[in-house]
Structures are given as structure tokens and as C-alpha cells.
Amino acid sequence: MNNKPIGVFDSGVGGLTVVRSLTGRLPGEDIIYLGDDARGPYGPRDLDQVRRFAREIIEYLLALEVKLVVVACNTATAAVLQEAQRDYNVPIVGVIRPGARAALQRSASRRIGVVGTVGTIESGSYERELKRLDPTVEVYSQACPEFVEFVERSEVHGNRIGGIARGYLEPMVEAGVDTVILGCTHYPLLEDLLEEVVGPGVVLISSADETAVEVEGVLERLGWSSDSSSPGRMSFLTTGGTGKCVELGRMFLGPEVKDVIAADLNRRPEINLARED
Image 1: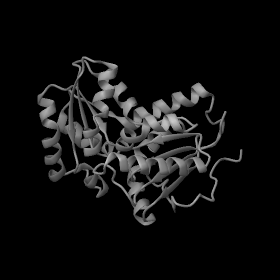
Image 2: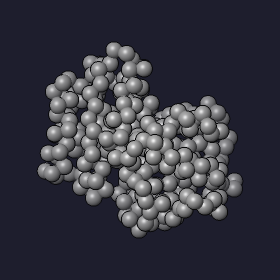
Image 3: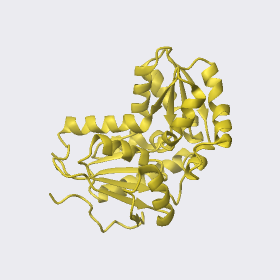
Image 4: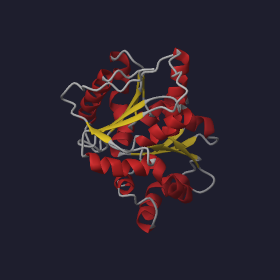
């Protein structure tokens, strides 16, 4: 039993799709979410810079006494996961391996598509992980740099985004993929649209959902699941403007996003959001 909170971070609000999945599977867990809105999105940035940002945030969350950290950003997972797992004394879970593993479980053709930010796709992280798990798999990767800005404008349907989505995904569907990994935590909000684009013969894999399964397994193996019978508490922090985060957060997670705390990563946090029970 461990009633300390789970720490989750992303370059913005997209990682709230992971929080949504976590609360569905682990309703008794407290969660601290930090969005690095002041420096996001990470997708266009150099991976060394993203690595530095991610380490700052992990250390900030550790100062808040989290028991586990979820890197709820595909670009940051590609940049920092391996060294973070080596350097810090709490479990660090990323979003790439769970998504890759689930895609291989669902794919019959062994032709798998991956859509993500420029940084994630150029890193080759999904392709490496997929081929590590199954060297015979064929991977079709596509950077989708416009998706995030459409999601953050709440423009998840319509002709404009539909046309862009078809341009990104139709070539891989024509190549015969039967499974597509949504390799950015913003993308589950486009799932209805993307299902229309790829058609009924293609399965979409949400890295957010699969990451929640991974976290549940880690906590169970360690015996660290919360024993609280009451719903977990959620706390939201941002390095950017709090007003915009409340608005976007409600789009991702609903009315649970009420108050957002401004986080200064250069100062040791003075708050402790862990449970007292």
C-alpha cells in the first residue's frame, strides 16, 4: 500500500487524456498533473532540449513526493525515458512501449502505422520499439504537425481537419496497415474523425489507454496501489497561464478541472499534495 500521488506531466494539456484513462482504471489514486504550457509543444523542439525540460519536471514532481511518474508525452518519452528510469528512484512510465505492445497484439497483417509529432516520428522511437518486440513488423510513420493546434482550438471535426487527416493517413491505409498507433496524447480527441478516415478495417491504438494499463500493473507488482475507499484527488499545475489551462483542461477531462496552480520550476514547491490518510 502506498497512498502517495502519481505524478503525470506533458508539454501541455494533451497528457490529460492519460489522466482520464488513469482515473478510469485507478479511481482511488491521487494524481498531480503538470503541463509545461510555457515551453510546449515539445514536438518541434530539439530532443536534447526536451530532455532537459523533462528532467526539470521530474525533479519538481519528486519534490512533491509522488510515488510514480508518468511521462505523458511521446516526444518527452523518446527524449528522456531510458535515462530517467536509470537516474531516479521511483518508477518512470512512458507512453511509447505500452502503445507499441498493444498494437502488435492487435495487428494481424504486421503492418502498423504510427502518427505523432515531428519530434516523436523523427526520433524513430516507435519503430525501434515495435521492431525490438517483433523484427518482422513493417512500420509506416507519419508526422502530423497540424493536429495539436486543431485539438487545442477544439476543432476536432469539420472539412479542414478532415482533409488534413486524410492527407496524413490515407497513404498508410493504402499500404495495408491494419493498426495505427495514436502517438501523441492529444490525438485521442480526434479518434472519431480518424476512425472515419481509416475505415472499419483499421484499429486505432490510444497510447493513453495502454499507459494506464501499464501503470496499474507496476503499482500492483510493487504493492503500491492506494487503499483509499474514496475517489482520488486531482491537482493541476501549469508553467503557463492558468486561465487557458482550465478551459482546455475541461475539454480533455471535463468539469473536474476547476483550479490550476501556477508552477515555478526554478523554486522548490512548498506544497505537499500527498494524502494524509
